[in-house]
Length: 390
Image 1 (cartoon, helix red, strand yellow):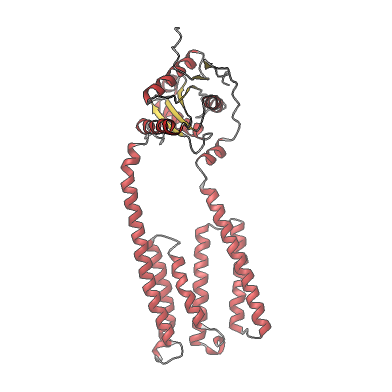
Image 2: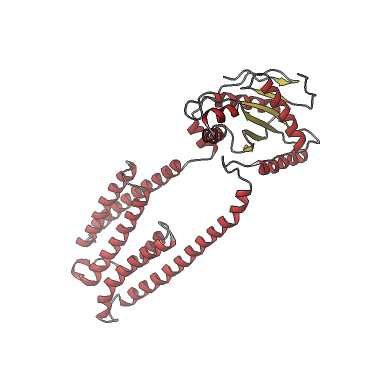
């Protein structure tokens, strides 16, 4: 465990020990995880299923009380009453992936609409009580839903398959003559569906090309500012952030501190275990440090085994405590396999008339003292005091 952090020209401070689990802390630092997003989607789906089931029960009850329910309508209501609770349980118990659940909803909706349409057009004795006009108004929603499930090409294929289903049901009816009661509305529904699918495909493909263009445009800038090994901000990007924070300090007086981190005896790790383990150690260290930083903080690789943390809105004393916490957090357990690793930290804060070089020189001098004092510790340099001679 690290020793207490001495602050050059200031009081001695004892760091708190970091105890939160790495995975949970890292999830908080990066602002959420895919698991949390999936949980939200599941809750939304279960809410929709519950509301759909409740509205089905209410509608069915109302129609029965009014004496308007027929065999076909009872069949439709019955399917909904069974389908929604079953799907609710499948989502709740995580028995199906969300993508399959969404596709099941799409197939069910298309199937109900197609069944009602077929009964009304071809079996009037059973479907006489089915009103096609409200049904035709809801069919286009199916295509919109289809384009939210997959890529633009897959969504087009799904939508065309559903349209073909409706056309195959409507065509025999229309061939009996366009003077049929629902012929005009049926033709309009099919034409509107085709136009809507074309529009949805156009906008979906345009959005896809726009996103690809954005990624292509941002890729060179991202690569220019990202360290290849750790995927952190590189030296160039960190200098930009430092200069921006110094400008904010000069304009608004907002404090900002910097921690310069160096892996203790990292050459021994490379020499003893190989450069592959050394690279794995640096990547794991980046995750370990990032796991207890705030979203506003910036962590970057300065070069070799050195890292830099920029702490906006953070005074010198608070930064020293943070640096000591980092030392404790890294030393708490091995980063890779069973190879223990510790770090040393040099802390400083932005001063009036500072430039990036002056700030980094102070941090480097504080880091030198931490190394000379036994490593696995944090030292802070608040002012430009001369370094004591060895």
